[in-house]
Length: 165
Figure 1 (tube, one colour):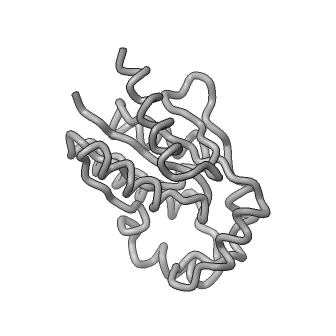
Figure 2 (cartoon, one colour; figure 1 turned 135 degrees about the horizontal axis):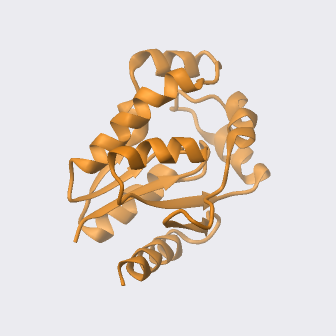
């Protein structure tokens, strides 16, 4: 059975931490979607300029193709809007999305504590404005991102197993 999971949410929600731990638990490869951005996107975000859809869509297709190319993979990717997730699904139609839900204050605190990331805290509001939570017709699960890491991983794994039945 293939396992293609996107751990999604705004910057600072814990996508990379949860995604890496989930991949380890599932015996899957982990890819941080940030590593798939072209340099022009990284430079734009580092300068505090939000990406637009012209910037995102080619990157999202790469995310989807990366998912499709592996049998067992977890990718950390913001996937904030429904149309972004649809673009990923165009490449990997069996992608399962795990949305990390986090309140604004916690997110701001996490972003302020990060020193080694190209995404500045100043872009948090643009990410929250863009966020469209998973809809009922999307395959995935919403997880409270303030739970202990093992509980977050267990909840994602259980939701994934429930969809395979």
